[in-house]
Amino acid sequence: GAVVSQHPSWVICKSGTSVKIECRSLDFQATTMFWYRQFPKQSLMLMATSNEGSKATYEQGVEKDKFLINHASLTLSTLTVTSAHPEDSSFYICSASWGDGYEQYFGPGTRLTVT
Amino acid sequence: GQQVMQIPQYQHVQEGEDFTTYCNSSTTLSNIQWYKQRPGGHPVFLIQLVKSGEVKKQKRLTFQFGEAKKNSSLHITATQTTDVGTYFCAGQSNDYKLSFGAGTTVTVRA
Image (cartoon, rainbow over all chains, first blue to last red):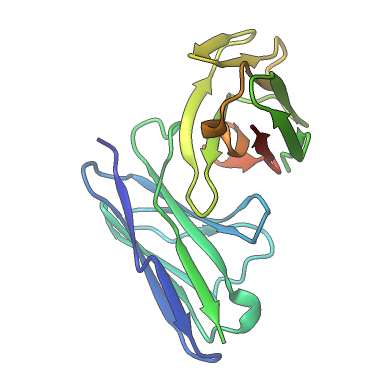
């Protein structure tokens, strides 16, 4: 149980375009979803926390208008990278939790390359 | 904000040897979690430690949580090639956010 999927698994886009990444909890209802970013050979950096039906809480330094997060249901959260630039190229990983929120289940990640 | 430091960053181990990776938090944690990420993969949950001084074992892996709930360690005995990957500790505070350490990347020579 506790499976989280992400789509797409990888995407290449041109600079200036927008990309949407989906995160789904397949067998549980996720009260909270988290979005992380991981640069090559670096650790995971939390970008934002989203609760179903409410606005996401962004970490310091993360642009809200650039990384749009929508948590429309208890099983789906989306991250849209708007007007992507090459420096946005990264591995984006979501995680989901329920209940007391202590255990997070990670999706397989989405590798974004902006050319 | 909360910071989690993890050392060493790299660990090159002879197959069969033991090694330990350490984590230290700048603040007291609610719990600490350990994850393993294989090359090209995503983090996979290994274990969660909640109680002060807690010790948990998973086969050849031993996890410890310090008495002050600010540090933790992962000790692997008799390293195998399947242990290759990056091990992250992640400290969690009451707001459920996970602060990841930098990770220890383990390579094994046969």
